[in-house]
Image 1 (cartoon, rainbow, N blue to C red):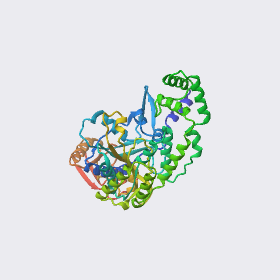
Image 2: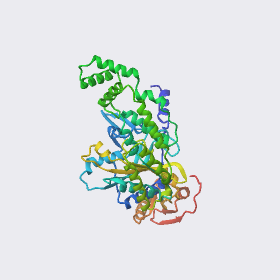
Image 3: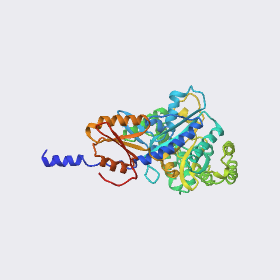
Image 4: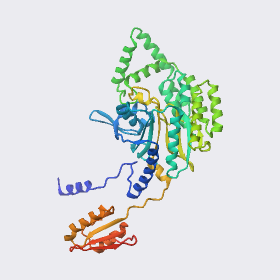
Length: 490
């Protein structure tokens, strides 16, 4: 390597590296502010009996594929490392349930668990949203029905009250739409699209049905192809046909592993799609229903009659309606009156593990800014391997967003004393003085740059250090009070 190239290489090696897009650095003042908010949130949860736990940042990717939903799966940071599929956790709930299945199934119920830690989601960075953020929340395991739902909704509201944010609560029940869809022979992909559509319709976003029909329902040509295939393979068993289709997909390079479905489920879906000439009528009926359900939104006094009429018109199970009314009554007992609550039965929240009451909490003075969200997920524990059903519900919130909205006065940093030797030979004695002051509870810095007394005074002013202790070689200690914070430069 020539000398010029060596110099160039050194210059390239010394070039600064930028942080990844969507990731944030947190300085000391911002960290103190967030820590102040975190302490208040965790204090509320602790006073309600929730015990703090910590789960791994890295988990098997499959843990999040089983019931997370397509949107969350698309946000995951997932890699193959040493022949293992692993992912940075995009949320805590599934990890907490995995921990329950591994270690807590013999514990008496209910279990009240809380958490606080980083999660990672690959989504478009914008104001109040980063690809890494601190998720704080709790899970109430083993509490069926409205009593559990009301407790976690009340907790979500109370943690915001604790940092000076007046909450507005929006409550729904995913069981209504699940009941309707369970009565129709719709494929899972169609059901997923309908839930996705309902959530967007609820938020006022446009969704068009007709452009989706061909992709979701298949075509007459595919149906004819399946009939011809069946006629040619009349004596072939269904299992053999599935093995052949799987082999064809793999041979042609179609990805059948690493997604949210097993290869067998993918093949079954292919055959089911070929076997159906169309399900457009069922899809249109379902889309009309989710559109009507998403349109119901408002105060309980207005939403409840409209929701009851929709349930009766379609002959659906009325128990979700009863559960919502019970939750509202219990929230009133917690001191949350109905004028702080809206009903939105078209809520889906994008996760497939929810089974019942759902909710989101917003800042009352910023109606579009969601701060907390959660709901009931009674099936998740068994999906992850639990021996018995486990009724469960919980909520989570983003610490950074809450800290920004709370606007609490910045907590003052600790008063700091600077101990400085006035000569190199006084360093050992200065260290002894610094340690003796720390033993009394003081926050102490020790000068390790061998600065002059004047330079240490300037440094103390710039740092906001309130006291300077000068230690002489003779052992003499001289104390000075530093007044004001200046811009002196050494």
